[in-house]
Length: 269
Length: 67
Image 1: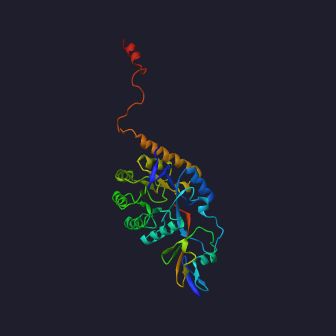
Image 2 (image 1 turned 180 degrees about the vertical axis):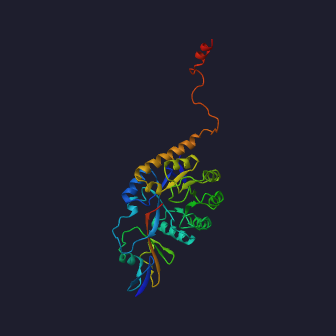
Image 3 (image 1 turned 90 degrees about the horizontal axis):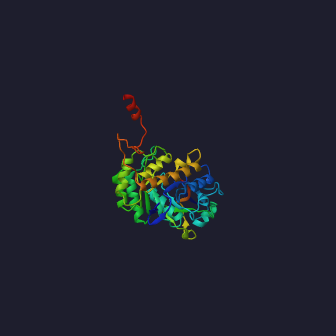
């Protein structure tokens, strides 16, 4: 299996996972380990002032020395909020510049606002951030995000946290075919087959959170996702057979089949 | 008395204080945090020098689980 390269850095896992919605940090860590992911997303939030001073911290459970942390802008609806969040993230993570940008347009669907996303990406790229960008499955916007310098394009498969799977494989295919930077499906994966389908399309990777965290057994699902992403990648590299509608083709030899023709012939004698 | 708006909430202090003094007051010593003052990042290297004044808007953030 060839490696995933993002912004010049090589990763052996093509599965990226989020760290939200877990029961506790032990479960987060166990799921991340089972997933085999090397890149994990984190959110940036206001600290609780004056409360829970001894609360365990996420970065103690998942140290930046072991994982590539990908700070996100989840919950940001404006260019300003997204840019400020990632500046804080870079300071928090000692100058680490690989980030996940998302600028949302609607709290009900969490659908990305691609106009604002483009503006925010431009600012961040000027400030030397390496921007992996969450976007819609619009191939034109995806291309524009690539052209302004995003290091990876991450279209949705369906709405964030919906688990609805790959709703428009054709658009994803266009984005993949046109892109010179990695394309990762981000959002919408519900189960292992969804991840495999994304990889079979030729995606460079898959980013997911809820599909694992909201499974009845998150650690087992993380393991399933790891295998699905690997299986999908191998199937993509292997090159699938052509689909043949209405024309079956037997898998076994057509010669040497025992038949009753002989018997029938005797009867008719 | 000065007032700072910290993570959206007003807090009173007897006099202007440095960022490092604020971190002590908030019991955040040793925590991995990042600080923004009036929309600008305060680099860790300036925590001892920068003095916070009345009306400053301060954001103190940490990394949390997210997707």
